Amino acid sequence: MRLNQVTVTMADLDAGWNFYCTLGLKPVVDARPRYARFVCPDGDSTFSLHQGESGGGGTTVYFECENLDETVSRLSSAGLRFASGPEDKSWLWREAELSDPGGNRIILYYAGQNRIEPPWRVDAR
Image (tube, rainbow, N blue to C red; front, side, top):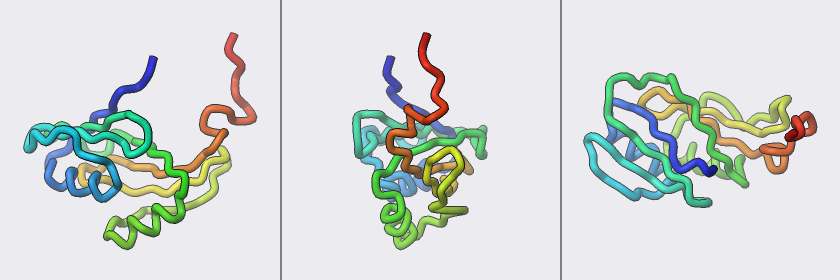
């Protein structure tokens, strides 16, 4: 099984479009004001926006960045405001947090091998 896409809901897809393009996602479908889809710049996962009023921060999305500190610096210079980070976390990830225009939490992080191979990993049975 492979994850295809994550879809978040927000009221203003134009604001979401601008935010996620600035973040570095590449547009695939532009059916605004109702729907938009992007491909992540690394790999082939996609990320979608769906127009609706029921957004508001109920979703947290993690995007992994090889050069987290440089990425945060570049995005800050482009006008995105970060709530925190980059910071080293006790779970061995380095993270920075911001919110999209719909209030969803966006975590940019780097975990390296600790993403799926942390020291406390449960062995498959």
